[in-house]
Image 1: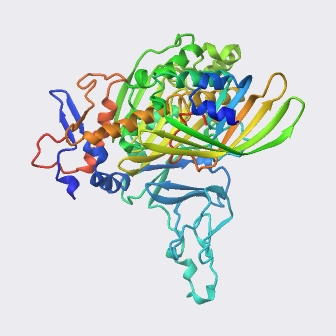
Image 2: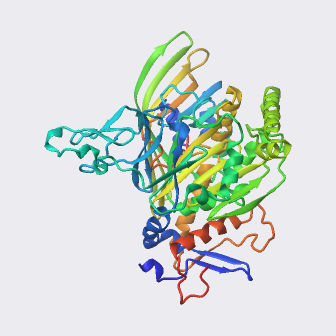
Image 3: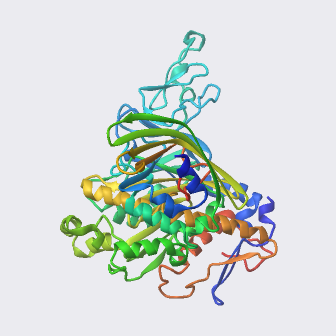
Amino acid sequence: MNADNAQPALLVDPAQRVFKVARRNFVDHEIFEAEKERIFDRCWLYLGHSSELPKPGDFISRSVAGRSILFTRDAKGQLRALLNTCPHRGAQVCRERKGNAKSFQCFYHGWVFGADGKLRSQPGEESYPDGFKARDTSNMQAVPRYESYRDFNFVSFDPNIVSLEQYLGNAKEYLDVICDQTDAGMSIVAGSQEYSIRANWKLLTENSIDGYHAMTTHASYFDILMNTTDNMSAGTGGGFGYDLGGGHAVLEYGAPWGRPVAQWIPGWGEAGKTEIARQYDKLVGLYGKDRADRIALKNRNLFIFPNLVVNDIMALTVRTYFPMAPDYMVINAWALAPNDETAWARKYRLNNFLEFLGPGGFATPDDAEALEHCQRGFKNSKEAMWNDISKGMGKDKPSHNDELQMRAFWTQWNRQMFPTPIPSIKDVAA
Amino acid sequence: MFAEADLLDQWRLPEWLTLFTDDAKYEVPCTDLPPDASPDTNLFYIADDRIRLGERVKRLMKRTAHAEFPHSKTSRMVGNVRIRSRTDDEMEVSCVFQTLRTKDGTTDLYFGTSNYRLTTNGDGLRIREKRCVLGSEGLRPSGRISIVL
């Protein structure tokens, strides 16, 4: 593959504190094709949350890394990830986006499958040999690997991949902190944001764990925040970025906005104060003061390689995205919330979400604009070849607005894309 | 509605804002929600009260609203205007809209139905509620709503 024979993807020199990323990685069609095989076919990819399928027969059609997946809860209540293609001639069996069904019928020749993917019947059954229905190849095929962790469901197209828990590694602890906001479980709130950005998918990875851009890119949001938080009087207190291994990364920090679990701001008034105090006391009762403080007062932007972001900030977001072309990605985002949340807290959670996040919010459109302008800037990538993400390099404990998190991503990306370093170029990253 | 579209196309947003009552709402639900969904219990794209709508306008008039700097060019078409119901002081009106937005060499299309609740007492019509129900499947390829629909 030509992707292997060109300039290095990264330039890394820890002694000189240099970490540079080739802009070609964002524009080259061969890199894009290689990523499909070496990243998206070999990782655990987020499919959906268990709460999206509460009842037996519930189903969602979802596209994951270009595959059409039917995510179902079968009659026995078990979740299944099926390849949405008829074993007979290949048509997509389910053509609805979501719903509840006892069975699925392929409209082409009328084969009927259960929510577990098993063939139930087909027209002209007498023409098929005895035992046809019992053959595994007569059923809808499951995704090669499907596992879940704390109701986050993942699929992999690599049958030999390590277990999901092993893959998540140190990221599990952060998912735990996020899910421990309540002992009543978490659910996705109805309503999914489906949007797109005309930029390379890796730019959104970088942006999602970039604590450095907020004050400039989101200046107009912080103007608004000043009005609701008494000029940002609430605890901020800085924070740190962490390389969690395996390409996963997180930033954890204090911030001035209100957190529905459980940081009060003046804009929420006395009613809000009572509610937040109640939530906080409950967390202390469940986990003790230290963990309660971490859950309530720290924000987390968690990135799980290669394309899942869980932002535990002024609201709780789950966001996944997929490349469609070197310069175009599609994004799906949801709001996650504690099951036992009061109507007050739910309302403010969603209000917070919309104020900052999402394609109609006061921040995400500016991120999208920035990413699209990076992509435009990369038109100069043959001459102006490198991005620099060396901020905070060599520090013992990089700050949340340094760029350690991005280096963690790129190091793993490079490891998977170019497992054998190109021998002729000694500067390429390990 | 035609006057409103004209004000928005001319980026006369502070003037546009005066069309709204103090208790007004401006909402764009996610496209997989039922049309009567509430933003208190469902995730929307936009759910502004009058205060946040004011902040939206202030923001969009700043250079730091990067998504709209320089301002995109827009062209709004409003059609099929229907009065759905009418009481002494309120009227429910719906229309279909098509909004084109051009910026940096790309043109996006937004389309759907807008449902209005208009107050009819006092001097002239004012908007108490505007809900834009997108006709597209999500926000692809338009990507974002950085203008007022």
